[in-house]
Image 1 (cartoon, rainbow, N blue to C red):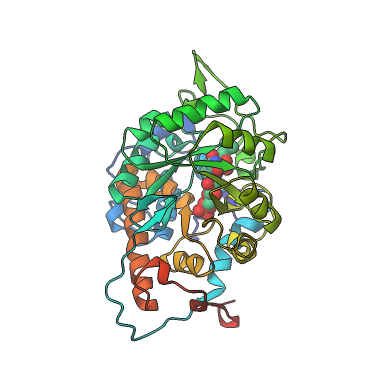
Image 2: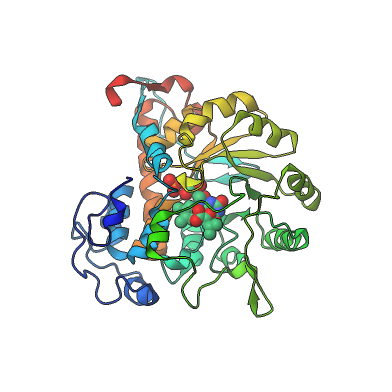
Length: 401
Ligand SMILES: Cc1cc2nc3c(=O)[nH]c(=O)nc-3n(C[C@H](O)[C@H](O)[C@H](O)COP(=O)(O)O)c2cc1C
Ligand SMILES: CC(C)CC(=O)C(=O)O
């Protein structure tokens, strides 16, 4: 992944293909025009000559198609990781390194994928991770994502830095959690919490790995620092002005305690890699933990999130459920994370690729593909449900290195 990105937009796509010269008309490279050229449900011919999301058969193809369709500035903002992107690459490599050791002749019947997370039912153990700025991918923005999540019965974790409000997202009907960067202005934080509660969000996800903004050098190279005119962080608007978000080094466990006093919603701490922090999260009343390195976008050279699952699980010792995000691209990846101790996983970039390729239909297709792969993997492993996936189904083996 790393190293080849500086060549774009004149280089190659994620699968090594050359980008077609001006494949999607005027506006490529001019991100002010992007929504005119890439919006809408009808999908132009992609790298494999496909015409619509339904013709794409895996998440990799969505990534390649999104690369074709998106303004390179926005593609790189979405795709990029921090610094040398060592962690970004490690997230996917950690899944490749691990083998599935299936069980046979178990007569387990058809797989049932449903799970209950923090008291909320979901149709499969795959959530939409919070990602900022969906309007960069599609003019329907988070509304399209939310409709696809509602249709699929999966939990969407709405980002605080969404480009439509949490109320508009909730109106699209998904099972909803709200991601929060705790703001040092606790009054403002409390007002966001009240809005999330009123909108029907069923959990608050506190992003803990961002006391400062990670440096995405791809975005920096493009000079991409601000949202284009007309796009803004809708939840941060108050009286004709948009509040600046603070990713503050002042935030601490004390703030989590304050949050605990503000709300009776379950609190999920996102971005834990160290067992000591996992223990602290439980002590401070967290109801779940997301093992995550923020998709390799914050501190580079942290290990793959999958590699941190077992140590965090050991520290937590079953007291709260664990979720994992980072590098999930296949149903086999989901099963490997379940085997290593996750109750569910979340996907970040694949949602954005779906959105860029086909709005609601694109995200729906991404979810449908993962669902099919997950069902197929469970069946082939001899497990009827996500809960039946046991640690012995996964091994790190030399042959897959
Ligand atoms: C474009 C982009 C924006 C993101 N924005 C946020 C955010 O606002 N809040 C947050 O907690 N995580 C954010 N993340 C991190 C994701 O929630 C998630 O941890 C990560 O994308 C998972 O890795 P994956 O992209 O390999 O699935 C963002 C990730 C991406 C790619
Ligand atoms: C604007 C950023 C704080 C959103 C984010 O978390 C990210 O891009 O990874």
